[in-house]
Image (cartoon, rainbow, N blue to C red):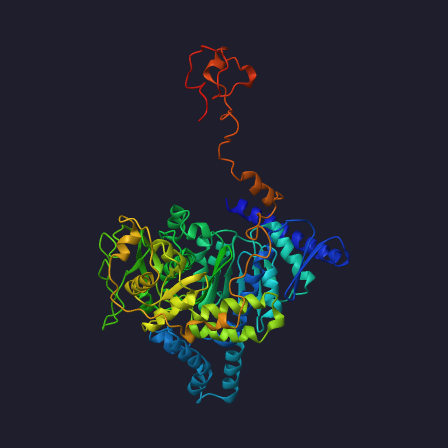
Length: 613
């Protein structure tokens, strides 16, 4: 068995060497060739000798632009190494914006604290110590575990400063050859390394201290669930984990069984499903990290086009892991008015921070107090903020200062601006048009609705996932009382007594809502007309076919459209022959179908020869 394993390894290693030599020769040939396809994105250029040889999706250019900007800001102004020893000794790590600021100040003082301990030593040893520490500050290694063409890795190497090494890994041998070819084409052989191995196995090999990566980037075709466990281990303490999931139909509740199997959470398909998808993914990452006494701090979480993208920092702290139950919640969703209520799993309001027992509940009864309908039960989801306000604000300033570096700059500024305006302590949201649909009333303008909530003393914003979102820290009762006051000013006619609208409007509002327009109700991103919710630039703007598949997805979607609907113009409803045809008695002969009208007079009708309805 051992001999066979050695033979297989020698064969595979020889294949990689041959493939690399072939890639080098192909790169030299491609420099002179004019028939290949070249794609220029950012400062990188990749070449394709054949169509769809390796997976590449131009739709994801915004994803790559955003990732480059995040890494620039994270490495340049956010991440510091090594981790201060006082955080480790006290098992204390940064969680809030204030603590993270202290964390960065302490990181910058590591060199001074180490120098104080070396005062009794020779000056030569002290200078050598300082040199080693300054070197470790720029010892930044990045792993792109599922690289495909290697474009993202190439852009990191060319556009993110102070990197020591970028590993571009892919299990596909064709992808490995394409990566090596593109590395040579961009003359980055000393900075980017192509690697061919299963992503999970490679990350498990790099989980020990000293082998971990400062940044681990996961961007698979579909779900990233199977890669989360090795990824949280391969990220060094304080490092950045970037995760993309394109299975939004699963995360948003269309395939709830698959979501529970992959992410350990039951989704509810509702108007806030895209934010819920982000919170389910964050909850899944936190769960995997907790198993190794680690936890996450979300820096930026975005729902974009057909995928979700999160950037989280990974820390190690046993005491902080004890708080994880208080960061998650189950939620109740009303099937009538679509009110939602969160049930925290653990308590975080205790005077003693040594233990975090189970929270009290439930927050609702069997029926909704607002409309009397039943509840659906889902979760767990992440209930804490999905963005770090300080990080997003600094990232936005960096992006504004480098307009010429990104082709999707307008959209980046718009997205980050909306994320920075979101109410951080308000998980999920209402949707104004759906509230008005429930009440059968004319909708107020968003500016009017936000002003009414602000006039009650609460915070409100939209969400980057939905332009009509009402994201607020106001109780649900306040929202519905505002709408009751609105309906009194704009009466509704012909409402059935048994309807949800009648039950809601039958209650008198407990507040006097003011719809006076306020200046702060108009968010800055809207007042300066930023590109916040762009339309798709072309038809079929979304996922592409897997690598190696040549089929036209547009033609395939058109052929599958309505394939299960019955053709009402033709009596041939089924393709199988009737029972009379089997014994040779059907007058239709070879044209017989399972259900067709009979042309023979006085012939007794059967269930197989009746007129189709």
